[in-house]
Image 1 (cartoon, rainbow, N blue to C red):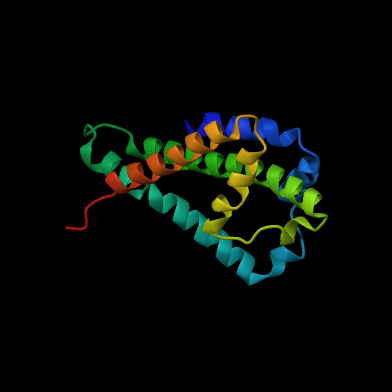
Image 2: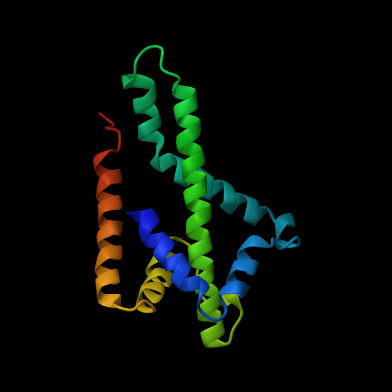
Length: 159
């Protein structure tokens, strides 16, 4: 479900004015920013945060599979899918950040703040641009709730 919704949002976002600027901002790195330690700290924090959500799955691969199962391969696949999902959702977000910057006549870097609140700023704007936005907003937030419930229910116990 998340990939279907993100694909619909990406297609719609690519048709909006300013989307190309957002994608270029996402893909083209700022060389001067790469020299700042804070950028590397936040990048490492994002990687550990996103892999940490799948850590319970990795433990399950190691614990509950057949003895001869290649759990290294399984963990590598889940990590690659996780990285692809992060990159793909970044494409979606930055098409809409480009659109929002175009609409507000400002720089893309100042459109939205960073952090987890970004999903509650950019994606509602993205869903609002779709025809039948009420249907899409219900579907989107249902998806967010189901992903959050799935991660909560599959988290390893600390007992």
